[in-house]
Length: 109
Image (tube, rainbow, N blue to C red):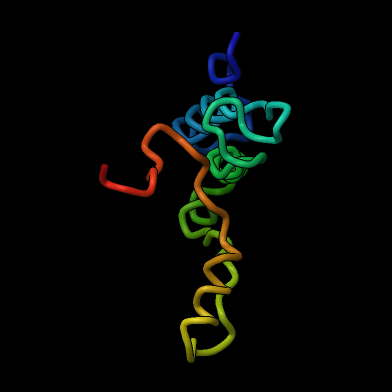
């Protein structure tokens, strides 16, 4: 039986969010030998997995708290970016998308 087919715990305030989180947790459950998610190919733990974990927690919060919860923001430069080198250094620290069937190949041959 899949996680989302089991009855939800008694402290769940948003059943639909909880079921969606369980489905995503089932899909993005394991990393392969390369340290990537078996379902989507992103580095483990993948963004969908982390989102599902947050959704699972939010589903048991009081509805006002869950509705107004703010996601963690990625680190941004402390001040205005004064040149392209600072911007590219900040951009290079961000996670990259996994290679996939629609990844750019480099040319228009």
